[in-house]
Image (spheres, rainbow over the protein chains, first blue to last red):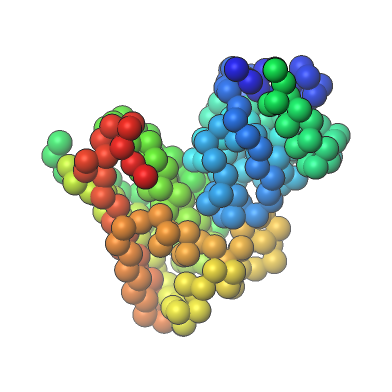
Length: 113
Length: 149
């Protein structure tokens, strides 16, 4: 099983919030910054990669039932977003990699035998 | 299951509480054991409606009634209403401000998403007065995880 926890250690991601839920399993990846577009296309258990960091990201992640959110390219995350992610048990991660590089690396992880 | 009624007030520009009504409704529906795919559709439709009130209106309310057959959601705001409903329903059309777009909204997908997620959809608006959405999603016969799409 592929989990957020496994992904964090493999990609050396920064765990910003939501540690309680890092046991979530992951199935696929979705990349997007337009929240209502993401809302209608993201699938359950997706890893959602975005550079959007306002509090509404957490609501979309929770309603979309993603396994975690990765903020790409080291974007700064608003304090209120971190608090909300903690409250809602949404793993909020950060990386200096681009969305593309993250997706490539996640794909390698998902395809590991 | 008897009919359960829930009411949520949604305030204009309240991005901090955005998603609370839809999250709460989603939790209730899950507790009632409604199929998770159906719950997801209802949550998406409600979230979009909630954001529309926050972004575009003077404030409003979301009324949900859940009976053994369906979930019906009435979303009503206090204006300013929609001038051209046909245009507003078009995917990609948005009147959202630059500030709202920077938050990641204003893709022009809200109303089309709502319509796509539900079984019955009606929109009424009086320009200068109000907009009202009526959203119905049937869940009976889908009360098991095997059911659904």
